[in-house]
Figure (spheres, rainbow, N blue to C red):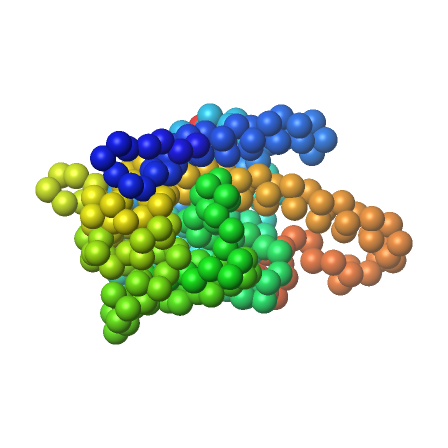
Length: 336
């Protein structure tokens, strides 16, 4: 799972090879469970507008999902789509038992509130792991769907057999998508995690860090000379400079000091899509198990007690009432 470079001290972590390993396991699990569950995992992705990066990312997700035999769907909205139109589509997908994972592709156009729309997604179908319920479960150390990129980082660390217990970790970036959940996952693994931001003394923090997770979204903002000798460097940043993709870390300089380092591209980004597929698999399995539990409880519940269980997750007050009617005409559905 690791490839070396003769002109570097650090070993490169081969995200592409690890991605294939994850996808192979997902494929095996789907083959094993589909007869038991009936059908296959269903993944729906919503995109608003024509952001080129979003289109490219969704293309990768589609290739992975179709390759695994998932029931894959896209819902495309114009740039000017209203929050009501998008939320109505999400609520309909919440009610659709053949859809097990829902992902709202970010970023959204400026007039839309991403947090408000993500909160409409049924937490059991929130395969991006960004719903407030899943964020809260992560914070409390409870089972739930985890954000794909931080989960991918943890998987990379497992692959190189990096024992986090007692280690010092510095996370550069405090976003809800990477930085904050990353810190929670590292704390759960008994690391001492520090979240760094614009006002932090980065050289001082990184000089003590056994692990650096760079997720600032600023090319080359982490200087190689700041890296503690022997540290593991995970570069989440993907930035385009002069027609090339680069990370947040000064790669060549950092590779002279680190023990392991992820390249950009070919590192964390390579396995994030694979973690989304694994989340969709987990959501599929969990929903089938949940349905069995409901059916078992129903067998001993008064059949006339219509309030015993919500008819679907979307009917629960936590998720809001699902609106009736067909999807607005501003939505184009593409089913592969």
